[in-house]
Amino acid sequence: MKKEKGFTLIELLAVIVILGIITVIAVPKVLDIINKSKESAASSSIKLVKDAIKTQVASSDLTGPVFTKETDGCYIFNFDDQTSGNVKALEIKNKDKVSGSIKYCNNTFSDDTLKFDGNSISKDEPKGKIICKRATTLHTEECTQTDGSMFCSGAGYTASGSKGTSTITYGNLGTSGTLTTGDSFDCDVNGDGEYNPETERFYYVSDYYNTSTKSFENDTAVLIYYNNVNLGNPNNNTKSSYDSSGENWHGPRTAIEQLPTTSQWNNVSLKNISRTILNENSSNITTGGTLPNKFSYEGYSSRLITIQEVRKAAHNDNIPIWKVGELDDYNYFVENTSFSSPNGRNLAYWLETPCSDSSSLAFGVYGHNRNVGSNDVPHLGVYSVRPAIEVSKKNIEY
Image 1 (cartoon, rainbow, N blue to C red):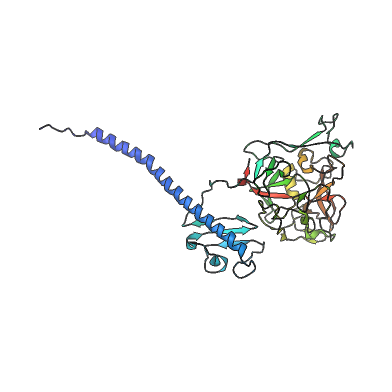
Image 2 (image 1 turned 60 degrees about the horizontal axis):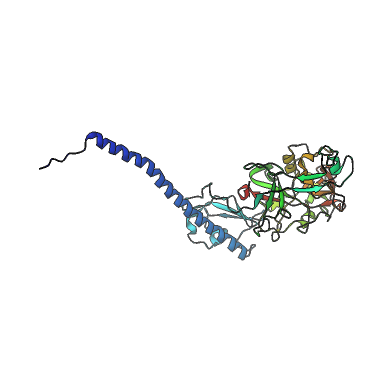
């Protein structure tokens, strides 16, 4: 008989080493596939939960016993307590496997800690829909003002001026991967899938300023529209007061009536439709009275910009310094004002911010002085309304 030769010890050790290497490489990949599968299942299930919330909130009596409206006009769904309240009433398959909580406000979810069967959605999930895209061209206007110190001519936009040209260019094209104040974006605010550079032009101002916590939040961008509006439509000569009562401690009750509604700009929404109104010192009083801590923007998809956000954009915490030209390096703030042309355009638009040392003044951006100033809140002579939108940075292509 032929004698069969066996494996040597060295050969067996080599096989064991190879198997060990394969195990080291393969097991993490298998575990990664399993984890991704769990995340995918959790993502699909949580999406169904959110869809159910949207549908059932929209079709239910919002003031009835089924859904409890929070003080800021939003809804909190706490799945860790399913014994009572609005979560119990939700008709969702496998609801008992959902944990965590979520806030639903003005057709937008936030404060999301939801898990399904113990699994959360990875922070590296796809961004979702793109609301704002970087502009590929910039808006320009010709300077037709002739004043030596005011308007665009005072800023140097003449053939012999410091700019060396009469053509005004607004905003920046920006640098990929970085958000800089003045970066130009075209935003699909009405949800039609178009990013119109003429009528949907916005400028990045700063991170979102939370007036309740008095702090900036870097997950959300604030962008200002290129034009003033009249009942939500672009218009640079319709005038509006801040508050027709003449009292500044109620917030911009009259001005917000010109803002785009949630049906006009249905692709964007505010993080909180109930906002704390602050003065320029970030406190809640004027000489007239206490400012509202629950000023409602309900029904509107945008708001007025705050003086804190203007300061952040201009890198100047002392604004207003009552100096002509304090916004010269940030001219996107004054597009479509009398800055460039005297032809029926308004001089200014309102900020959300009232003056602390007055009972009747609020701040605004002035085109002729290129600065932040103040005026009486019932004033109709020069002020318009300019919307600012809040967009999660996950929904901005930059």
